[in-house]
Amino acid sequence: EEIEIKIKKYQEITAVLRHKATSVGLDIDAAGFVKVQDIIAYLQKKGFANVNEVVLQQVFDNKDKKRLLLQQKGNHLCIRATQGHSMK
Image (cartoon, rainbow, N blue to C red; front, side, top):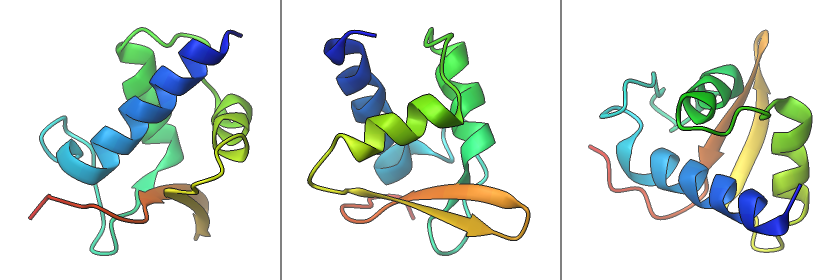
């Protein structure tokens, strides 16, 4: 997969988690976490058809700023932005 596509995925994920999770219909908890499966479904609707947990992990592993955090919460792998939230 081309690096440009990976960058666009990363940018879309960070934008959603930082600013618009609720406005695009994603459930976000009090700590800012969204289920990875929900982010994947959102990205697939946006045209990133080949996204899955493995691809998502690769996208994050290749970024050195680490603006996103993956964490297991109960039975779900979840993700959150680590900085720059503007949602209320």
